[in-house]
Length: 296
Image (cartoon, rainbow, N blue to C red; front, side, top):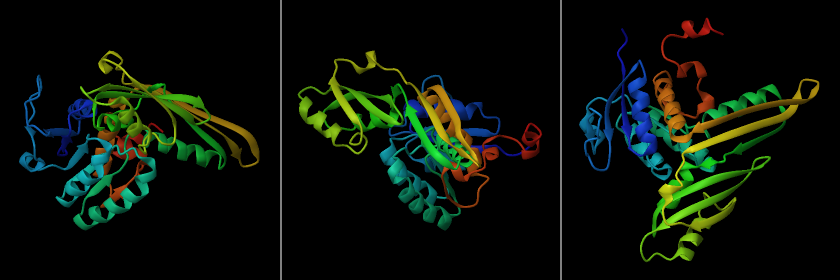
């Protein structure tokens, strides 16, 4: 029997909690521990919890379930220690630069980084590329929501004066979105200052955004999300080819499951940094290739 992949989960927020379940459910993985800022025991879970990944012993791959803006720095540090990484970095405009940086570190240390392995960017990116191959000429529209964006919500929670927050993505059609942000303020915080900080943040600056103060964000909390991708294009001589892909999801659960799958795939790649469109989809599945090829 092949030795199980030793996996650590870094961070224990919404995504980290689901990642733990995903690793424990994987037939070819072993959860060696969870890395948190405070090494407090996790209720109802018999797993080692540490503040430093070095205290877990051998780790093949780390699932980075931290806020997006911490992921690249964390990935660089783990790759340099000889640990492969998978993250769900979701700032689309920064992916190319992050890939270049992590690729050099990974190759220098014989490790693998899988960058932006969530559902978008991530598996939606794979679907977009497939649609592009099916109809090389045309336009693809990606419509998100209605649902909570984890990355945007975390970005708002990091603002000074914000006690808690939730950002909803509202699809307007043809790839255009607006955002509605609900903020619960710390005592004494000025709403207009917080609002201006949100509206000028790179996460929000390109979309129409409404910021609203509420007494209790948890009363609104719903991690559901979804996407509808549509492409109208040309295949060979045929016009008006139409493709669509849609899903309604639990955001952190799907993100975590995808990261678990790409942890498996990471161990099947040569050293370097990869985005999801660069990795064969068959590498996401447990077991040998022949058993899956028989189902094609």
